[in-house]
Amino acid sequence: MEGKDYMNIFVLNCGSSSLKFQLINIENEEVIANGLVEKISESISDFKYYTKNKVELEIKMEIPDHKNAIQLVLERLISSEHGVINDFDDIDIVGHRVVHAGEKFSGSVLITKEVINALKENIKLAPLHNPANIVGIEASKKLMPNTPDVGIFDTAFHQSMPKESYLYALPYQWYQENGVRRYGFHGTSHKYVTERGAELLKKDYDSLKIISCHLGNGASIAAVDQGRVIDTSMGFTPLEGLVMGTRPGDFDPGIISYIMQERNLSIEEIDEILNKESGVLALSGISNDFREISEAAEAGNDRAQLALDIFCRRVKKYIGAYAALLGGVDLLIFTAGIGENAVNIRAKILAELEYFGIIIDPEKNNIQGKEAKISAKTSIVDVYVIPTNEELVIAREAKKVIEQEIETIIKDILK
Ligand code: ADP
Image (tube, rainbow, N blue to C red; front, top):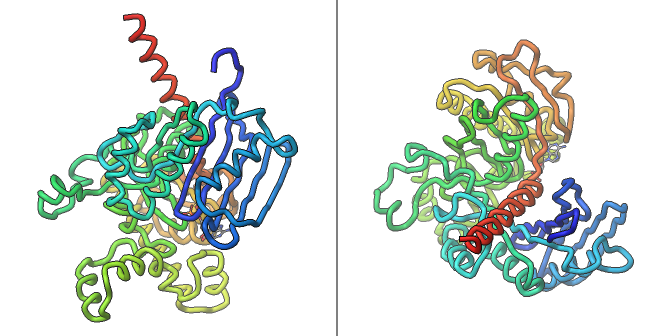
């Protein structure tokens, strides 16, 4: 790394059948290349690859697993035709998004064998997400054995939550012996937008009371007081809290045993229904995509309208609850696919919140996908749209971890 005026960080975000990547020069935070592979292990996978030199490739081919997908991306990055780096040595660090770190890690870490084992132990806490993250880490270690890997965890930012927020009123042994507690997710996104919000307000992050609404296909909301998360809506799993694309958010857990008996459902079936077949998809009967639901609602479809109403009502309810917990709000932030783009949904959530000091400016709210203040001059609370940038947080964290590791090694040598 020494002697170079750049440090390239390869950010990897592996989902169960997809991977997203970015190669970022962390010195100037420029994205050198990015893209995604979708439908991994299906008969035809989609590979999209873009570079700062305006290369845009879309390839459909069979990609059997994540290792092959990563290999394909790396080959592109160094290829003479479309490449942006000379060889793998130009990748200094790999930063991996990992969904669930349990209580083990409250910050990002250099990935060692012990860390991988700890993540494997957490598979039972995040069976839908952690296995793909681990596959990504192991593949990258095989393909780039000399490059350090850093894990950045979705749960880490929320580890500052107090016990009053993260404990459920369930048998205490469930927490002590089985790890049942609220963990929270989307931590990297909440961290990025809240820090960015403080920058935009030109105020000290540690002085602000912030509510951050990450409204994407998965959705969560977090209350951040003086830089620390004091509550968040996702819980032990990403099922809790807001209504989502295909997840129900909060509902009476008594329904589970009742409906499993009534409809003769297995554990796997109920799990699948709660994760993939509920939420606005179930309510609207149309789609989990808010664009399609909004179109249908405008065309007069009652269930589509109902899905939007229920979604917005839940977000509003949480904003009220978090305003109470925070004892006031300085800044309210909208981010992710819906938060950044759905003008109508933001307007609906924020309607009639004057009592809370929140007044939206309809003209300013008429924006999509860019940073903007959308509250009226008379609003006590500043309301912003801030596009999330989880990859940049991952790259920044990866750099920080490696710098700290190097510092520790030097200190040890000088002892
Ligand atoms: P995730 O990362 O959880 O898959 P995203 O943050 O990418 O989610 O958000 C995806 C969702 O954002 C889509 O399902 C869609 O409902 C919503 N979305 C994207 N663009 C718009 C838009 N212009 N209007 C309304 N909703 C949108």
